[in-house]
Every structure is written in C-alpha cells, then in structure tokens.
Length: 181
Image (cartoon, rainbow, N blue to C red; front, side, top):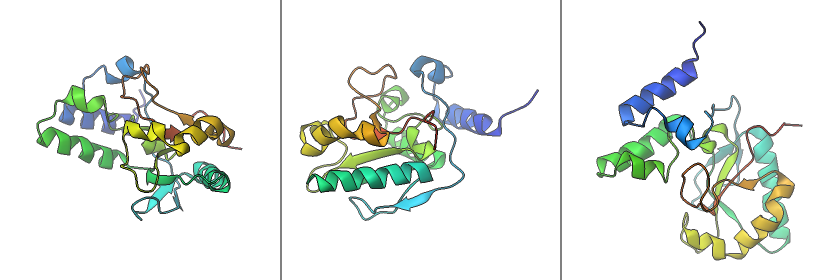
C-alpha cells in the first residue's frame, strides 16, 4: 500500500487541532498541495511580500493591469500561504477560546485552503478595511464580477456556498483543475 506523506501530514495537523475527521467529506473541499514553484507578485495592501504559482502570478498581473486600465485599483491582501501558516491562524483562534467549528466556517482547515495551491488571492481596495463583506459594495468587486473570469479567476465562496465557508467577496481563485497552458 502506498502512503501519501502530504495527506498524512495534514491528517496529523487535523488531529492536533481537533478538526473533525469528516471535514473533507462534509465540506467537499479538495486536499490542496503546495506548489513546487512560487513567484513574487505585487506588494499589495500592506507592502508585505506575496507569492503565487507562476500561472496564477501571470494571470493576476494581467487582471490587476486591466483593472487599473479601467480606473479600478485592487490590491492584494493575501496570496499563497503555507499549511503551517494556516495552522498558526487556527491555533491563535483556538488560544483565544474560539470553537473549532466556528473557526472552520471562516478559515479552511490546513491542507484544504485554496491559498496553499498558490492560485488564490484575497483582494481589497485602498482606504477600506480588508476582508469584510463591505468589499462587495466597491467598484473593484463590481469590476471583478464582470471581468475576473477572463483571467481565470472565480469567486470561491459566494453566499450559501456548498463548502460551509462564510461569504467572502474578497476571495478569488483560479480553480486547481484549470489546465496551465
């Protein structure tokens, strides 16, 4: 029998965090592997460094330029993050007394976040609080809903999505099953 070290590592993290054993089956989220190659992309909202896998980095650069050409400024809030970073997010919330089920409605479990694959971006606009539903009332969101698909990006977590993740109008990703040309 062949074992999958990545899946075993993720399962061990889930046991340590108390993620329910049926998490993948219940949410329908796929196991996401970290890419072999990452490319640094525009600095984003906080001047923090951000990375995406090469295909997504190129698509992001094209989308960002097209938005700017239309007078729309979108900035990166978050891009690739490791399974260890995701684990830390959840550990901090658990340490504050939040319940794992409440956390998993906001953050995908380690190993299941689209951010791990380097094809997801959390977006914001200058001068506005990041990662809030208010993003849906921005010109940037309106532009994205009309144009993001041209660049391969889709809104991952619309209202009442099948994965049980809260509505995230700021979270856009290139599906992992998209063929890289």
